Length: 205
Image 1 (cartoon, one colour):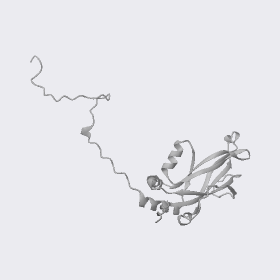
Image 2: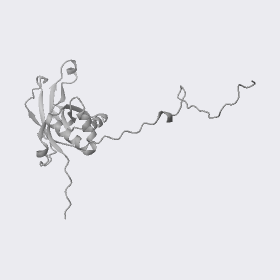
Image 3: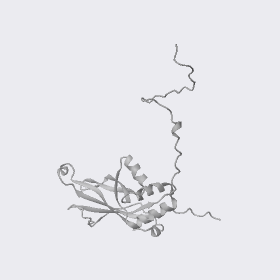
Image 4: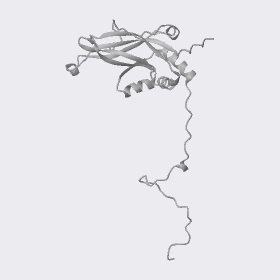
């Protein structure tokens, strides 16, 4: 009898849109262009994404500018398709912390790759997309470039259902009674307390 296949992790697929825009003001003297994260769009919902064969190419394509009201004239948009976003049981706390934020979001870690040039300058290439607060924190600690955009309501609901089913808060550690705390003087040095009972009055009395 063949073993049963392992249960597949919850997954969706998203498309990442990066925006290349001209730098405004005095900074334009040193840097003509800059890259920013423009959007993360749902490509395949959980039911559909689970049936798709993963595609790691993410070959970018130029797209029409996305009208967000913040687009600088002369901007260009590049779509990087089919990033898989999986939910892991051992990172349920990371998703819970995302849900507790004012605006639950996607985080995208991206790099400017020297081997891909546009007008002689490196192109911004997304590397990975996550919904985990912990993932984003680790990337930032490693000095990676990380941007975020709000997640759509259907993705937030999907993430919340996963957290409700998997997140178990860690039990609170018992607080040590104050009487067990070591005594110290005003300078933090240990204080010795004598239990010997003093007898009699003052010497020479």
